[in-house]
Amino acid sequence: MNSEWAKLEQQLPAMLEESRKQAAKGNVAEYIPELAFAPADALGITVIDLQGRMITAGDCRLSFTMQSISKVYTLLLALMDNGEEGVFAKVGKEPTGDDFNSMLKLELVEPGIPFNPLINAGAIVISSLIHGADPDEKVERILAFFRKLADDPSLSYNKDVYLSEKRTAHRNRSLAYFLKDNEVLDEDIDVEEVLDVYFKHCSIEINCRHLARMALVLTNDGVDPHTGEELIPRRYVQIAKTFMISCGMYNASGEFAIQAGIPAKSGVAGGILALVPGRYGIGVIGPALNKKGNSTAGVDLLEKLSQAYDWSMF
Image 1 (spheres, rainbow, N blue to C red):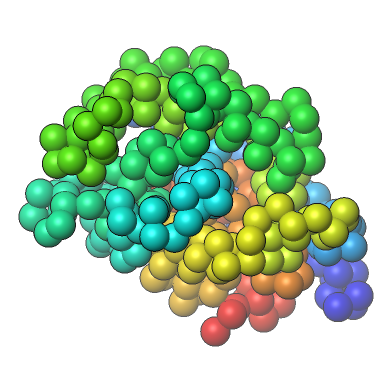
Image 2: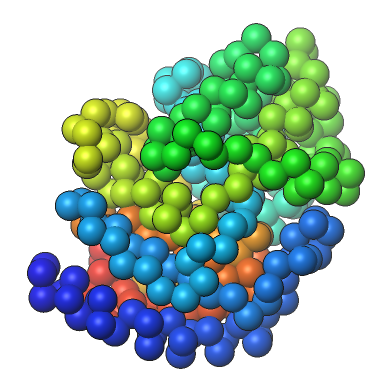
């Protein structure tokens, strides 16, 4: 392990620069207008091990919003609030084979619940399950949870990105009202309030260190390796990691499982949360995306690292 860490320290910067070339094959997300300002050629990574050692390379200090990466942790919070039965009465456990913002199977496949918690429809339902008297309290609980995991009490959401999402979220609004009409969202739930919670947790602003630290808790089965405190029950971490393997990289999840074989979750701001179970938490940023919505350079780097160091779970 120590020899691997030494090699990683030595080789990571050069591997990152090689993968950076893949950014030219992608494009920065523009459907949320505020995301279009991100530097398309950026690529950064942070790796943290269970002893607290950290390796960084590239543009790892670049700030970005979590977007869909946040769905992993709102799922965990919803499980802690409602238990498995309460959550999976409302969302399924299977990949969709459709785009992350598709509503196709909601109408075609009974019982009409979202296929999994990591697609937009599923994450909107999960947002409705977070306990709190009102949207502000729910967002504060989410922020408190994320701050503890990231070990940064200043973590907050980016108001410009939040407002940009809110103004342009016509598809998500359609999904939410369809879910309400299908009675997946309960009768007493205000759709706009649920969407507000969803937009805000997607807009939480982080960097690669935050992401690697949040991944490290999952790597260690829900226990903070630095304090020994259980932040998430182990069973719920198992569920989250399984979803990351099966659904975490949108419609490229199967390909990523074959090429890298590690749990990961991407977001359209270009971030990737990844982990090597029992060993490392990893945070990556590369804003240029491929057609599946994943970072072109970030995916390339994680696949190269996994293959070079034999990280695949399979």
